[in-house]
Length: 414
Ligand SMILES: *Cc1c(COP(=O)(O)O)cnc(C)c1O
Image (cartoon, rainbow, N blue to C red; front, side, top):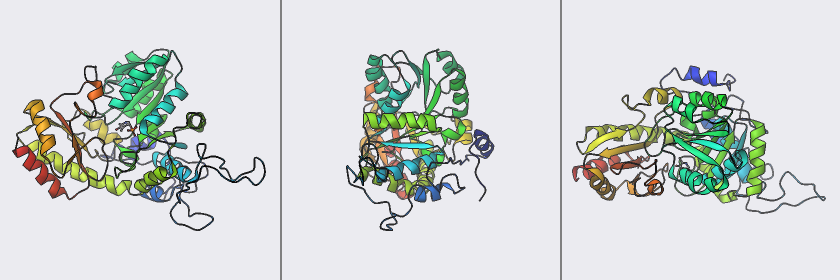
């Protein structure tokens, strides 16, 4: 296999195919990343060589807080598990390889990762441009926590590059991007945003939770750092809460690693192991999530109770062209607006059987939720408020016919 290039050009070229692209960086100390292996091979092997002492094929859960020193200050690279733990290192190496970055860092949650990033790059007086439909918890972090520490933010529709450009100030340190966005599935042009951010002396961070590194690799498109809630597709089984940062360059990676240890919101060994286990099957799961989502979209579009379907795979979606350029496939999340308004939306949420009513997303099981009253209740009354007739589906990997029959029955009953 040819050595993959790690340049944005490579992805732009690949992007001329409909939904394509795959690029990998070179992670320090890992013989898999940067060696030309494909995504699934990296997911299964990067950072995960057999255990040198026992030969265990699967990375063990190193459930230990401390490590023996042969002499004062002499150890095998681990002294205390907040600073480093071998199970966590395996996960961090794998995540960096999957995103094509140089440094991966794992956290106790997605928000812990975001907090670490912000405290690393922002000082009092700093300003951040955020999406006007950011994930509710991200918006809360900016509006209720960072605001008090003197970090200001401007919500902007990221699909409008000119508006982003106008929102930039001399003190802007970050442009915060989510694409696809939650829950409206808006699409932002990552390469375009990177240019705008860099022209203004700021960094571009992309929350890649919804796409996952299998579908989209922001670093190759010019982003400086990627954020994940690994709770979602990377973990993939709704059994762990976790987060991650992947930095494109070693310098920022070192600063982030310093703050990861200083702030201390690290995941335990078992949680790291669960995310690593999930990551191994990310590619095959995402293929099925996307295939099932496409069938669900077809059904929704044909049903009279549905006023509109929000899905980047639809040619009429305003971000379709950009999504096709920067994503391998359009993803497993589907949002819809009900013709019958909020009442119908709430009724649909309580009428499904296979789709479980619950927050979160990205697990093997299908979930349904009402963003206005559930995940996005914290943005009610703000500029980020979501429509009350909106329902969000996280399409799982169950048998497609069962998902379709479940939705058909529930929609027919409205
Ligand atoms: C869930 C989520 C987060 C927050 O992650 P936690 O693991 O819940 O802290 C951030 N961004 C997006 C897009 C999410 O869906």
